[in-house]
Image 1 (cartoon, rainbow, N blue to C red):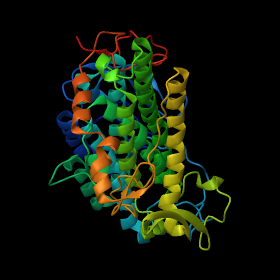
Image 2 (cartoon, helix red, strand yellow; image 1 turned 135 degrees about the vertical axis):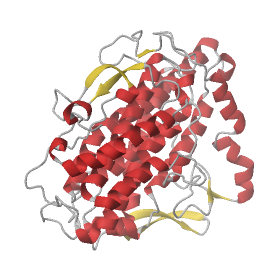
Image 3 (spheres, one colour; image 1 turned 180 degrees about the horizontal axis):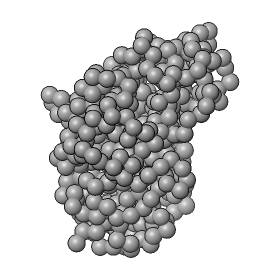
Length: 472
């Protein structure tokens, strides 16, 4: 990488070619990143040409360039949203002060931890999805998962840039550690639980994109409010790519829902599995699982850490500047769902320590909009079934509901009832085996697996039978 053309191979708008110290750090890190990508990236497709979108600049002309490229040769870039001259800190104790262009010394450790935790999720999802290419339902879907994967890789570059550019030796050590942890590894797992779960099939992948990448949207949006301006600008650009991941998830599940309904109408039967489709009750079980696991990513309902991040000016709320309060929250309260014996009640808690729950509320409302669209598809086919989000207390491992059993409709239940009923609410081994049995590769251009409907349109104006991945 020595002597590299940093604009050509690493498109960037951070003047990388003028920063020798940062160049040296990235020159040492990039070969290890490529080694990680070849070892843990999409398995079996490293030499294939994929129709990918590449960002070469942040302006409208350069944000999305499409073309066939081999994934190891993808131009992972470093982009920050355009600076806002005079941008202030909009919340917390430093509200009204100029945003920081350098790391504030008193918050150095806390800020580094926030960046590392976000950065760790990016390679983790690539690792979780590395085998799915071999069972793709179409070339269109195969291309989409690879687009998600390379953008997760670019998001890793974005966080490594911040660590290497602003945190010195500590940052470089953290950058190395991001490549050493592995999703699901017993000895070196990824930091957050959801990123150690298996993603064994395409139903799980689409649910992951819809629910877990949506958590990423809200975490990035909160960090985009940060008083540390380089982090804010980095996350604002990342959000433009995160939207594609959620699109892949929502439309992927939607196409499975559509196909299930088509099979039901075609065969005048609810037994969708008999005809090679994924039935709506099974889709509901996967919703229950992936939603509950993703809800844990927001942390405890009452959190002093969240309060500290806010007060320090490091992590704000979703759409902070649109909130109609004082943006300090010293005397404000917020409604939080809590346990009261064997009942779930809503109590007012100090707003500062309830920031996780407020962000979770925004997330749940966003998820519900997607579920509503799936239900519109079901209704349009005349099918009497409605998909639902589980209660936020269901199947939780973190926070106030972690020690109790809650049904999807929000009842606190006994251990005995949970043991008797949980197989009705969460995917069983039999469910997973059935879904896995459908995962057979379909790679003829324009053809789709029987369990998923074709999309409404192709990518970048291309037809559905376009060669999105060149396998020959």
